[in-house]
Amino acid sequence: MKRTVRGALCALLPILCLLLMSCAKAQPSSASFEAMDTLMTLKVYGGDPDTCEKLQSRIEALDALLDATDENSEIFRLNTEKTAAVSADTDALLRDALALCDKLGGSFDITVYPAVQAWGFLSGDYRVPDDGELQTLADHIDWRGVKSDSGAYTVPEDAAVDLGAVAKGYAADRAADILRQSGAEAAVLNLGGTVRMYGKKPDGSRFAVGVADPESPAATFGTLSCDEGVVATSGGYERYFELDGRRYIHILDPKTAKPVDNGVLSVTVVTDSGTTADALSTALFVMGLDKATEYYRHNDGFGFILLTDDDNLYLTENLAGDFTLNTDKTYTVNTIRKAL
Ligand code: AMP
Ligand code: MG
Image 1: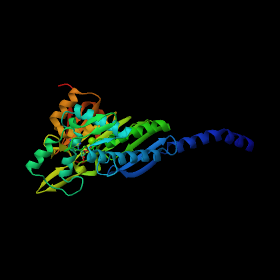
Image 2: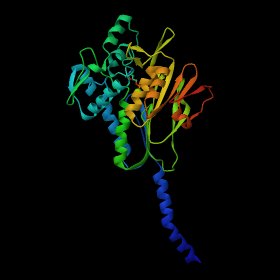
Image 3: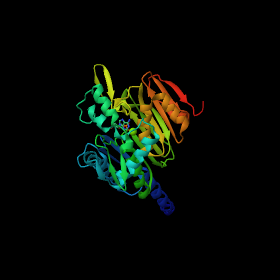
Image 4: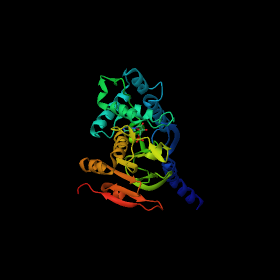
């Protein structure tokens, strides 16, 4: 009898070991750190044991290259010296960002930097420039003035570039390269407003991404259920100041050099590429509801959720089955259809 029990245990042992190993594997490794002016959290299932460290150092290295306010960054050097040779990463992102400026027709422009500076969004010394100053600033916003020649870039004398609207998205794409190389099974990389989902979760469930509530950004107003891809949100609540009862936000209209004031509170974009998701969320915010709707009707491969200050929530039809509201607040939910 005893021998039978021992025999059965011996037979079960490999199965038990396998079960324990699969449980251990299902536990993700994680990291949390500050980069690109925001808190980032990484959760990785499977892959090499040092994947999180590799992801963190890749993102920090990109931050060091791209941060326009850092005197040692390549973008700072380009903005001050006006002509500079740049690394492969800065070159790739500048190239993608300029193509997006072209595609997004005036709502997205990486040469808004002097205007962002003039409003005090970088120093925290907030001010409202007068009309004359705004006109001069607006006259100098034009991405077409940025020229490239085999890895070297030139910006006009009165212009400067700011990759703040796309840096997190680009970092999310490069992070995905590392996940692929490390053999990771799945990952959720929350790069502060830009969330990259990778692979398939060990339990087979879809990823769930909370969308920040613009009125209390630490909470969410809804959840998006999604597969591999990127969810990026642009919100006025992320950086703003108030003066004489008016709120001035950090997202500027390139045509006027003024903070956007079109009733939009936030835009969340779902698509495959991080750089595109990040640029699109900023651009659709600037466009406002009507132009964003038009853009959706004429372009494929993405969906968006747009919240307005009159408690309306607009959702493109391709996301309708993936979004669940989870707030006590009442929103009027409107579906944006591809075809009228
Ligand atoms: P995001 O939070 O991704 O929407 O990016 C906003 C940041 O991008 C701002 O803090 C500015 O540095 C910069 N920015 C503001 N307005 C624009 C714009 N219209 N096009 C490109 N970059 C912008
Ligand atoms: Mg953006």
